[in-house]
Image (tube, rainbow, N blue to C red; front, side, top):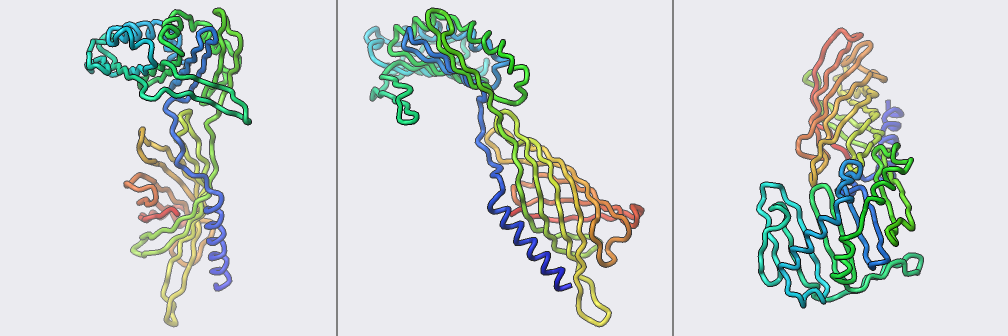
Length: 363
């Protein structure tokens, strides 16, 4: 028994070490807009970046940008004096729900109804004009002098438009983005996109695409090792438990882990009274498989709910007899570490039913 206890202790320390060094952090960076399309216009010294939840369903956002930009610039002219067009400004457009009242606010405090009473537009003068330099391998790959910037944001997309001056913005509003949409739609790899995100860069000169590169990024699935400790109740007996889990996490295209498969090896330690006085410990081990889904909302912590089933693989004492299976539920009780798990056992060659409950803690 002492040798067996030593093996369990060694296994526990080993799994703790693996857990500390190999576990993938489950808190991933959330991506509100997985798809990104960068379009450069050297003829106008302008750049447009589309960030979208789904290009496949919202590609008209790209196609309709010139019309939307013309409308925004028309409202900007109403709210600014003519002299202001000579200095760099930032136009921030937030697309609200249809029932929200929309206003346009300028530095001078003027207000106008905008975009069919569905958007809020803020125009602000850039207090300190900045030149932005982007380096890669000690080489300048992008240099943006002080200029005009337009930001258009909604729940489904975010668009950033840069141009050196207001006149360049107006010229950009006359361009067509039809080629951008059709180039991505006709890419042969898009048929196998699955949950991958689209990362595209295009250069448009003289009304034609001079350069195009489309890349697809997989959000990443993960494998992790976890160790845990439990206090449980079964047949009016309170027992401690150690568990070791190998988990497979599957992400959605927004970078949030939504599905989890776990293979769990758990050791339950039951204490029983000896006939000659004292106590003896009877370890019983289960090997289980479970499936869980993460019902986490935007900005919320993880909320895993799942079901599992297991078989008795190592039996000592008289708590279980013969072939034994168990079924259990995992839910969210307000903590990512603690979980209250009801368990349903079929023992004595699956003929006898027992109910158990345990409070588990994940290291």
